[in-house]
Every structure is written in C-alpha cells, then in structure tokens.
Amino acid sequence: MALKPLCFALIACLGSGHAVAADEWVVGLGGADLLDKVRKEAVALLLEYHSDPFHSQSWAEFSWMGTAKFDTTNNHFVGAGVHAFVPLSNDHLFMEASFAVGGYHQGTFIGKEADDVLFRSSLGGGIKLESGNRISLSIDHLLDHNLKNQNPGKESIMLRYTWAF
Image (tube, rainbow, N blue to C red; front, side):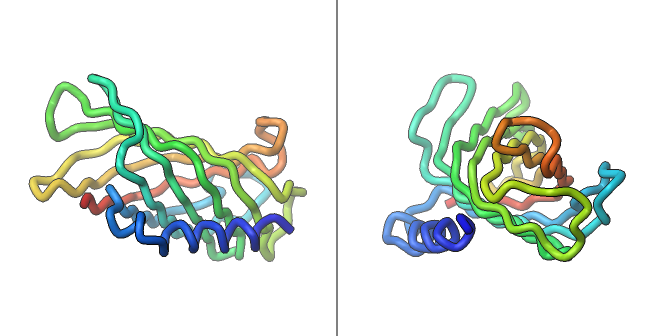
C-alpha cells in the first residue's frame, strides 16, 4: 500500500531542519462525508505544514504543503502538494486553495471502493488575526486517480487555525 511510505516521507520532511524554519502549521477540525449519501458522516482532524513561499506575485503566494487528514471512520489521507494564499482588498480577509496527491487508507465503513492514491483539492476563506495567525473555513474534496468524483468522492468541511512563523 502506498500510504506507509508517504507517511514516513511526510514525517521525515516535517522532522527535518527545514521544518524548523516553517512558514505555517495548520490544524483543522470538522466533518467528513457530510454531503455523501453512501458513506457515514464522521469527525475529521486535519494537520498541515506550509513551507516558506517558493513563489510570490502581487496577488498570491505559493508554498509547498504536507497534509494529513484522519476521521472517526478510520479513513486516512497523507499527501504533499501546493498551497496558495490570496490576500483580499481588506488586509484581514483572505482566500486559500491547495492541491495535493497522496496515499489513502479506507476505513471501517466501506460504502464505496477507493483507490490507494488520491488527489485532494481545497478551497477556503477566513480572517487574519492581529497576531498574524489565521482562522478559516474550508471545504476539501478527494478525487480518484482519474480526477473524477467517484471513488471515493469524499468531502470535508473544516474549521482551520493557522500558526504563522
């Protein structure tokens, strides 16, 4: 299964000296499969790391991202990808989006088949606090290896807190 090597790679990346100089750590809590008619709803926990931006434009910053999501039906996704941060005209409001590829372990409630390798897309918005940290609300979605909404076609709605360094 592809999940174990990806977990070890993410832990190695997060535990390296580069991670000490990290731009951001993110933790999220929310619900998974809230819009799914087949799977059972679950509580989900999200952990992310965003590197210092590798590319900046006047309208956005792009960072490398490591991500891990777990839910109460034992579904696990661990992946890596790109995170985009877009400040809005008001200095405190922002939008963010990300795209990642990673390993997936289907848990205890199997209502649909799932691929071992999936793609995750995410879109959210929120407010930047005076401390530089952020609070946001996001929706993310897991897509199968064909980038279609079938197997597993799994979504999560997350309340996220981002610590900026």
